[in-house]
Length: 264
Image (cartoon, rainbow, N blue to C red; front, top):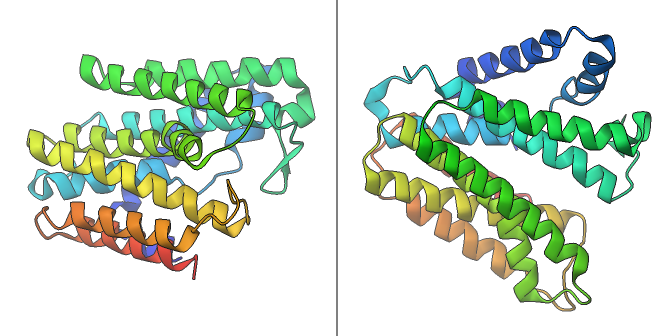
């Protein structure tokens, strides 16, 4: 998947997100805290959630020219929430490595890792604009992510219904919120905001289904990955058809198709 091409319309904004993350790490002058945060944030991932936020802002209101002063702060906040969830996931999964690098818990122990995850969450909330709806969106997503993890941990048997509930809570809702907040900050009309929220949800399902297919991690016997991947690809594309033509919409559409193609 060619992310550099997909991200091209918002590459400058993504660069500002990287700079903001670097600034946050440097801001903690205390060497112990600086080392712990740097351990995680110095290994960048795909930055999918900030990219979805920026692309949705552009697709939702192509004439806005991305001039909201809150876009970068909000995108960085979503990346921090995602990072915090990964730190806590590594503790739950007793994982010592992530993307070939030592996890926070693998290097510093579980107690420090729990505190590091909490710190990332707190920093994310501090970065959000003073906008009550947006604040509620990200707080609700964080709550739902925790509920999804509890459901998964306590389930005696994984069913297809529970599998989709966990995907929604742990993956899709955060991507949905990224798209929704991007659209809100761009000044998009309410119906466009709702469309991009639904797009993000379908994209999130698609993303996790492809990831699980690649890992050969079927939730139940005879689970039909191909059919579900195609279904969510189509639902995501259907959302985009209602938006005006723009480079941002094209990138979102390409993102959907190239992601689904990874499972073929």
